[in-house]
Length: 144
Image 1 (cartoon, one colour):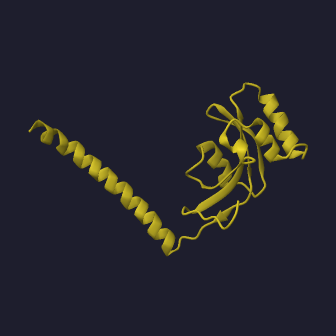
Image 2 (tube, one colour):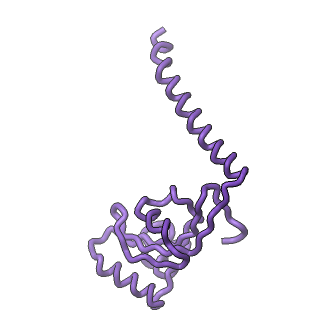
Image 3 (spheres, helix red, strand yellow):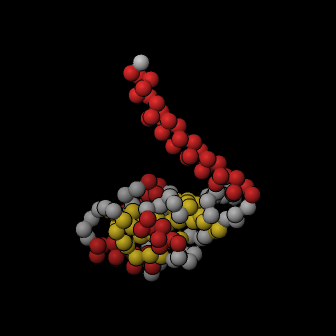
């Protein structure tokens, strides 16, 4: 990653993530976890070799991401994680996932963030209102 990366939402995490497979073989995933934990294999190398997702091309690194982006099981672990913390494999839908938080930075709720979040809310409300109006008036306009 180059340059300064920012996130508009309150908490952002560059995460190293490894979606290893839909396999039933949890033992293989646990063995991979211990190999990473004991520095027998570098996380990035493991991601390149074993990951089934696009992070296999980025050494497992995704992000920074805010807590609304990842799967809820992933977000729940990241919420309380310490930098460089490695999590044992867990199931997130059909995937076994091994994650490590690279580092964490909390953004400030300053004027810029407040305006950004306000515009997101306004945009969502406007879209909902427009859809509602179209749904209620379109049938009568088509009937004419």
